[in-house]
Image: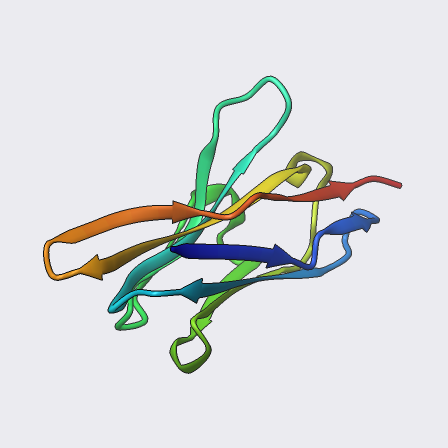
Length: 120
């Protein structure tokens, strides 16, 4: 079984910063791409950023220059540093990881989500 647990969400004023973390635990062989999605009320879930196990990153245009994704492979953890936060960044943030659990099985696994609210 594989579990992803997020932390670091909360309430912050516009212009502030938050750092999200997501730890993967359980039984698996390898973690490939890890990343973060978000879903705001009434909107579809969107990819915010992801990072390969080689460190190649990808960001949605709306967060470029403000958010930074990173990972610690030794700790099976992915981070999302969010700076210059805007009210439109308010959403539930979900981490995911593409994981090989057996020699023939690779699947995406998801965390439970953490709320980020940007408001004065």
